[in-house]
Length: 196
Image (cartoon, rainbow, N blue to C red; front, side, top):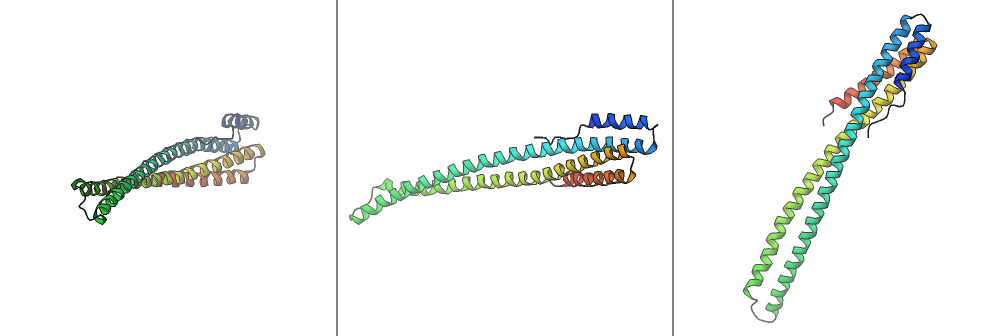
């Protein structure tokens, strides 16, 4: 799910080039053209990274959900063994109330169910731990995605301001474009340096 760049960079580049030619190749317009092209390239990179991180996070969340389902199955199995163990223990108690010794295999059967429950509980715990790890990894990637997506938005603003600066030849607007672009670079760098 890559973030889409809403500004047509090719059309924008053509417009800026036409304006540079019409104005006789002014130095300011050349700089605006160069920085706008650079910002468009950075926006494309940030957009691809935003899409890649969100896709990977979604895969990890899906894996986390699968592990949760497996853990839930293990806990249901654990409860089933507990019920069987309780039935076996009730049978032993019924024999004792009747003043008779329970058949030899009943005590072993009740112990078997308790031992199986312990193994099942450990397996369910491992699955829940794996689920938590996957979910945590996904959360980190989603945070990176938010930074990349915000940087794409800032690059789009910077590109739009660059186009306005090229059309109006107002250097203050170009400085605004550079400022928004620098903020986009900072967010993109923050996302790339984040653990994950």
